[in-house]
Length: 193
Length: 193
Image (cartoon, rainbow over all chains, first blue to last red; front, side, top):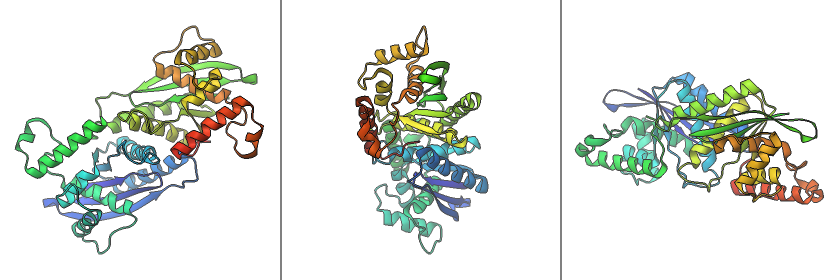
């Protein structure tokens, strides 16, 4: 299963592609950052981000696009541009019939390190180890995009299921489900899948 | 000059098309609301809004797309979806090489009624009068989209200019320029044109 992770941003939009094989064995495929010039108009910047994402989707043809969920509470100066960049990724995926998943940073930390409050350096070390990388890709947006892809690959089974199944969750699955439900309640946004 | 106004929204995205002729004489051309089903996933909703906007742009081929500027301070439950819908309009315009203008609701009220604090009913009556309409289009998103288009047509000359010109502005132009600059400072967003 090929997963393309997106760390959305208008100035720097991280893209990370990971292959999840049997027994959740992970392979690094690709990482990049799509940039737009802050001195050009908003519409042309969005077009740049959209074209960049489309090029990646057409090159790698992922089974799922995993996008970091944007919060309205975040930095007011950048949150709208970040949400719009995430929207470009959702549109590009929907146009190709590729399912979209949205995961919060807490979900990503939890899936990768087992701790939703893990430090950034802990997450980065686990990303390196899981993907057999000698150095961590920079800038941070590239690393975060890989973390998004890994997060989707390693999410607990049943993490996106509701109802009765939640009564039979392991502690990690329950912690995940609670974080996920909390995010849904706060933002009133439907999950992409 | 044909102007397509957009009142961005994920559930209802208003579209209003106005022709601005000589002496700023205005003609009503078209009004509609593009809807997406709140029960479908975010990516498919954005695709629906994007496709709807593309269809309007290809049918009317406007000279400018005028989009209501979204504020990060607005309703947290809907602001990200609204920003993403605005992003769909910006992308669709940029893909066709159509210039984008962003105007705040205050700028629209000011351009249409001469008062940036005008009541909604005052704005609607002026929209009806300016476009020779017998009834106001509903829902509100349709009316707001027409107001966006009219706002761009009636904006004071030099409203988008900076620097020395501002020293020679009329009181209405100065009020406009101040509102516009205030919005730019608050949001750190480049104007579309």
